[in-house]
Length: 95
Length: 85
Image (tube, each protein chain N blue to C red):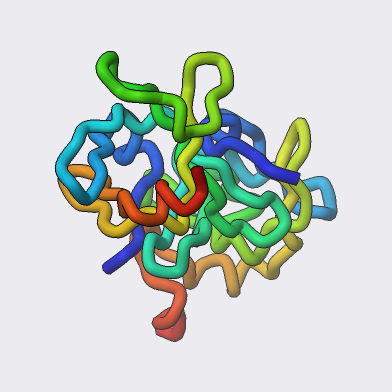
């Protein structure tokens, strides 16, 4: 299925266990790889992600499992999610 | 880094490698499963010859493979556009 990136803006993001994650505000694209690298999420549900004082988190696109009327991502343990900072690169997630 | 906010890209000018103006970026089409970027959806400039592009609802589609650079403007390879036409 093909999607237009603008159709993602404002969509609700849930984990595949039905936990609300937040609202998609922006999409990060990797120009060299020619692919979507992540979803920028705001209104982050503190029960799903501990975003701390950050305004939002970037969810790596490889976590996405389904895109339809809403977007689903793999359920991740909170500890793993905490390592994803707002502008953090995927390659250096270890603290 | 090569990672860019898609929101910041919208309304960027799109020009071909010969310097001709094509239009402004309206949207990007991606494959949902893989996240691969497929096409640029461009609002064509008034004077553009649209015959060599696929057109839908007044927007033209440019294969993402033709994109050469994305900085202050988006540059697409005229040669690759021609191959497709």
